[in-house]
Length: 357
Image (cartoon, rainbow, N blue to C red; front, side, top):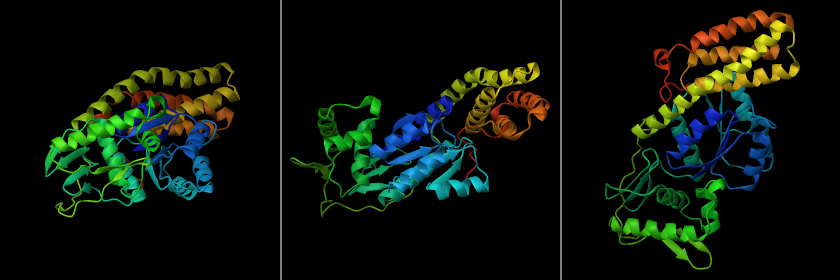
């Protein structure tokens, strides 16, 4: 399944993309709303994850324009803006779900699965006879025995199971399974289908679930009449060692970027003190504070995220004479907050995302 991620903060974008790709999703990550809108209009993405404040075209306007076109791709708004009014605005603009950035990757993944399930009208666990694919565990089994599929084999099988009535051409499969930067030749699809069939045959399936319709493409076969139908179960969306590793690596990269991020706010403070604070620097500092608030929340620094959000609001609204002492106070508070380990706030990434009902 292919997801378009619209997020302008590099650390946040990397974290989200790594989390999604570790769970077998293909991800195109874009840093501005205008490019994201253009891609969403042209390509058959299965899901969009959209930040609110984006360069060139904000997330709300992306939602509005896509819905005005008749585009029904599911949209998840993932943003630091999480007041009741913000949620209403996001949903009314066309988003299907809304989640605040505070770092619970398992819940994010669960909401992604729910939106994909809703759009394709499929069950939590996908099945074809006794063949099972569990998106929550990224696991394939046959007669309750696991099948060690390669990532692209897993993604291909999920694509067919989610769209059992659809004829899929090679180009359509490429559009769903590969990011734009890694688009392969169509012969790669033929080889991938061959590999998946062999993998399933080795696991004991006597009949391949994928049917070739010559001159048209591929589709999921009807389940043989003698195939046993097993009950479907819903698996929990708990964290995993693989996901924990992704979070730890992303958190380390984010921590390493903090000095450079704070430098923009320090520069704004110095400009206020020297009388050289310009509207351009104000806009730059405001954008950095917004990105910082989102990243801090995502990586589990709830207290620091709240301070960064307060700095953004201050830069957005405070009259110039009052800005210097208030910014100085909040900037010092932000730096002190960053000295508190995320675990001591009980908000480590992947454990404490503030859900929006």
